Image 1 (cartoon, rainbow, N blue to C red):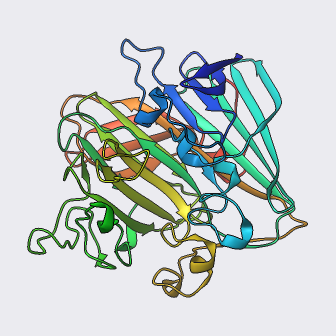
Image 2 (cartoon, rainbow, N blue to C red):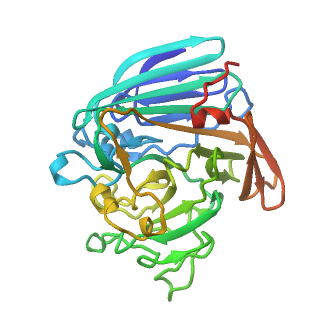
Length: 384
C-alpha cells in the first residue's frame, strides 16, 4: 500500500490503509495531506498546507518553509546554534530522507525512512504504521550516534476552520504555563502580538495580554485575533504509563484531532498561533494556521537556551534530552482523528485502556477511538 507522487512541488511517499491515506515529503518528511475517515461518508484532512506551496515561491531547498505542511519531526527543535550550520528545526525538518523499506500484510501497513548525518554523526530513522480499521498514525523515531543535550519535538500544524472560534483546543492537565518570554512579533515589519511577555497562566481560556488594555484573552478557541501571532507553552502532568494528550475539536467540520505521547520524552506542548501575522517572504500576511507542537524544549529558542536554567527547568520540567552516542534513543507518537456527535465541545479529560482512548467534553459527551496505547511505551502493534 505504498506509492509515490509529486504533491505541490514536492516528491512524496503515499502510505495507505482502508481508513487513512498519508503523504510524506522526501524533503523534511512533512506529513500532509493526510485523509482520515476514508471509510466514512465524509473524510477529513486536518493538517495545514502553506499557501505558497501552490505557487512558484522560489524558496531554496533545505529550509522547513520550502515544504511547510502538516506534521514534521525536529532535531533540534527551534533555533539552531550557528556552529551547527543548519536551518532552524534541524535537518530532519528540511533535508532529504532516504527510503529504507515498506511492508503491507494482514492489515498492517508500514514505511521506514532514514537520514544519516542528521545532526553531526547521528542517524535518524523514522517508521510510520497504519492499521486497517484505525484512524491513527503510529510513528516511531530512533536516533543513534548522537551525544549531548538537545531539544526535540513534533511540529504538527493544523488548518483552522472558517468560523471564528470553531476549533477548540485542550491538553492533559497542566502543571505550568507561560507565554513567550519576550517580543514574539517582529514589529519592525508590521507584525503584532496579543499576549503579554513571559506571563504565567493556569488556564488557556484566560491568558494575560497586552491588548486591549491588558484584558485576558482566550487561547483555547481558534481562529481568533486576525493580524496577530503568538507563542505559548504548557507543561503537563506525567502519569506512569499513561499518555499525555493534545486535542483539537473542529466543530465546523465535525471531527476531533488528537495526539498522544509519553510525557517523559515530550513534557510540553507549544501553541503557535499564526493568524495572518507574519509579513516577511513568503508569509506576506496570508497564512492562517495553528501549531500544536509536542516538545522537549524551552519554547522555540533552541538547544543552547533550553540547556540553560529557565522557568520550566527550574520546576523540574525537562527542556532538553540527553543523548548518549552508544545508546539508541526512541520516541513514539500517535495522532489521529475521530468523528464527533452533535454538540460535542471542548475536551475536558481523557480515559484510556490498552485498546481505546475516550475523550470526554465539558457536557460529559464521549468520543471513543481505537488506539493501541502500549505502542507508546514500547509495545508491539497488533494487526487488524
